Length: 458
Ligand SMILES: Nc1ncnc2c1ncn2[C@@H]1O[C@H](COP(=O)(O)OP(=O)(O)OP(=O)(O)O)[C@@H](O)[C@H]1O
Ligand SMILES: [Mg+2]
Image (tube, rainbow, N blue to C red; front, side, top):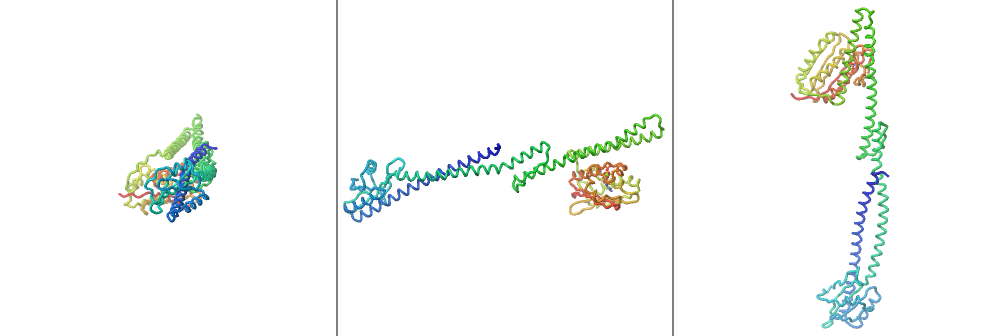
């Protein structure tokens, strides 16, 4: 048995046991008390009815008649005169009865009263009813009932209660076993699942447990396991693509360096090889910078300092900076921004987003095409669309363009100097700004990236 099951089971057991004991105690005393009370009431009523008979006709015959009646019943009667001298008794008067009859009586109400109710220690319980039959004949009717009978009655009651208690006890143990098992089984399964997770085994399967908190917890653990699994896979994939990406420029550098250091080659060729080595190193360091950015974004260590900026003047400065690159490739760049728009962005990081997208537009478009940047407001949000008339992205590649190192046409992008990190940085940065980015594209028609941000008031 598990520790928690035992602990919970014992707790539950003792609490329930205490409740049961208390309940039985209250029930028992209540039952006994009402039983004894009933007996006393009956005794008193019997005494009173004898009194009625006596008061109706006080004769020796009546006295005998009463005594005879009691002889047959399980109660006893003693009738005395005013001075408590016994006139008649239904059976032989014993010491217990004498003791009660000899008690001083004073101001007994007409309804009679209880003289002895201590059924536990005394031999009899007893009542007395006063009678007055004519001028000079009055006295008392004493009624007795042996406590043996009451004790018998109560021991029978005890037997019943004891039996009920035993049944309850067994039921308690059974429910206890089931309940603590039912409660702790999911907990134990989850504990085992998390142990497996911590050992790196992500194949965790927890049964569905409905909508309660335990169910939620178990679902969270399953999701956690899936996330961890995906993260691990992503990391492996990422590492292998990094090493792959590093290998190519390094192979170039090594190869060209090897050739360049030969004494026999022409100076012009050496120049050329050194140029290639330089370009490849540049590319490596750019890639390192991107990777470093991404790592920072992953750790949320990227500090984004947002300020409220006037979008159209901001876009104008970006336009200024990008213009020469577009001119060089003879691509037209149009910009159209609503004058009233304000957004909360980090100017440096947001520029990085736009540069990356515009850089792609240049890289993947042919000369004499057009790229447009349009910023507008829609339903409390601001969208900035960067649309080109370039090569487009095939439909099947669209879901992956934001993945790290993902390039549609590996060799072509490489030739253009791309590493496939630009868009993943863009996406992370947009999300760090609390926005989202969408892409739409059609082969040979063009591509549109749309950034959505919350609109700010001036
Ligand atoms: N405007 C676009 N038109 C056509 N294809 C695009 C466009 N933007 C991105 N792509 C495709 O998506 C891929 C990923 O783009 P991303 O910017 O992440 O990488 P990259 O441009 O190749 O390299 P980097 O930006 O890191 O220098 C590109 O290789 C390209 O195939
Ligand atoms: Mg790019």
